[in-house]
Length: 223
Image 1 (cartoon, rainbow, N blue to C red):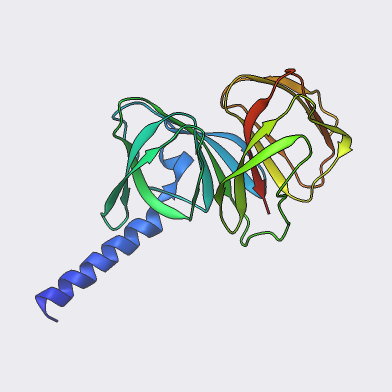
Image 2: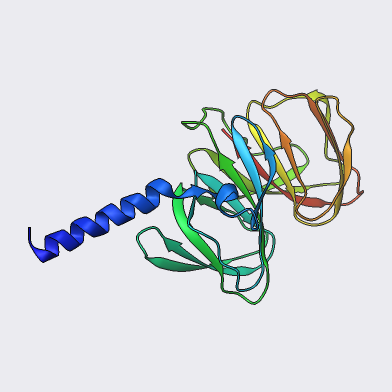
């Protein structure tokens, strides 16, 4: 075996070992990732990195990330390659499963919500392109889900018993008053920036804009 071939083989073994032993993000780095909600189909994480903070090598399944503030991130992949990304507050990005090490290279904190998809394959539900009394703008699309910027006008409401055939993750972009009661539980009305609520497919719920003015948030619709 030549030196070149040996070096290539060793590199491939190292890379495969890194990918194979990369841990779940929460187990590898609980200082920067906190579980907000989890069930059989989805896990929702809060991301929080101080300026200059760097993670450990870890992995994520397919996911959608929603930055809560403007930030700049360097991602170092399992093969050693790195790329930098500017993340805009209130945007969204669909990210295929990956193994990487993120580092905050910006001047401010990295704060965001990461919605991970746990099912072996994408669902087949059809996501809406319009909803009554609500303006929708597509922020990100992927085979498992789409993220929408939603603006609910003052008249927006869903009556008790409303159901959808897709999962929803509701994320507040700023403090808002939106009454949301899921499956008969007490309604959540006062939302802080970054608050999250999961609404399962087929789960009865009711909602109403309680602010008297347009309310903005992000909904991730999961097929």
